[in-house]
Length: 219
Image (cartoon, rainbow, N blue to C red; front, side):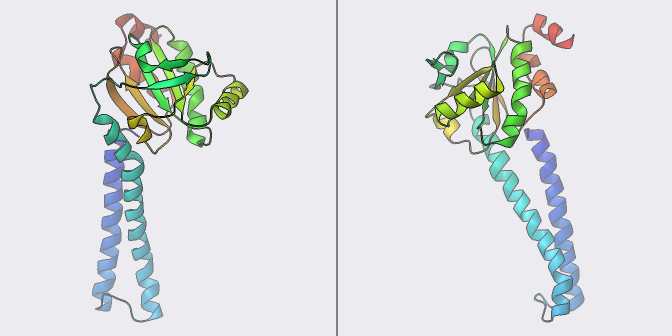
């Protein structure tokens, strides 16, 4: 999710909570007591109470799994993402994010056990191929190297994949997948939590490409 989508989802959940709360209030007024005293009163009261509690759960889930992850990255907006080293699965060598300065980077944090991650990777693979002159897709995992290497080989992915072991910012991200947009100066620009389609990534990178690349992306 992006920040704007999270805003509207939060509004929908708040409306959900308000509806559930109104149902609880109506039952209290009708029964003239806060806590039901008979089984029949409980049958009437429980659906609205469960509806309200479910809304609280979804609001907590949204904050923890999406908003908190976005806030962590956005604090670093317009700052260089330093100190990120990883083992490049293609070469077997230690690589660094700073080595890709001069290109737009989509830093995708994923895991082999993550269903949405596996669904998203073909879109990133296509993006990497279509924009290979201007964009680098770094798909990094913190799992065991042989596990990720086997996954890469089985699916014949050509995009740059790697394994990292420690980084303060990435270690604080609990959701998967998370994509961080980094411009040609190695500065953090945006973040997206959750799986996205090719069209999203194509539009996401467009403002950070040179004019000739923008023209190419429209054809």
